[in-house]
Length: 132
Image (tube, rainbow, N blue to C red; front, side, top):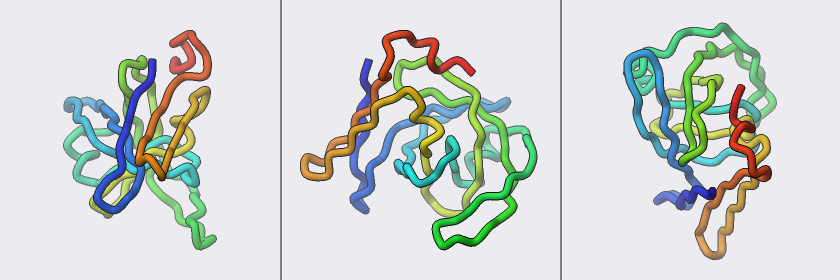
């Protein structure tokens, strides 16, 4: 069971993700960011549309070393045909969102810049790896 992503117009690797909240489900394309240790970061308007509930606040370290206190929301994410799972959702004012390393536990992520391909597959056969 493998899912494929693609490179966007800015040459960034991306993966499609289905996000679900109390108000419904949307499919978004998120930029792969293995330096982001949590699950997903999405534009504010997506979180509002989904009605995501607030989980709390967390301190996060940005790439420049600065520390920010950010609100964390709860959502549900599904990659390809894998079972959906509960995820931590951070918000961004950017027009694009991120999928972080937290989503790749027990997964093999292959990014081939030469061939411009992105592939993700479980490293174990059982689908239960996605159950939180």
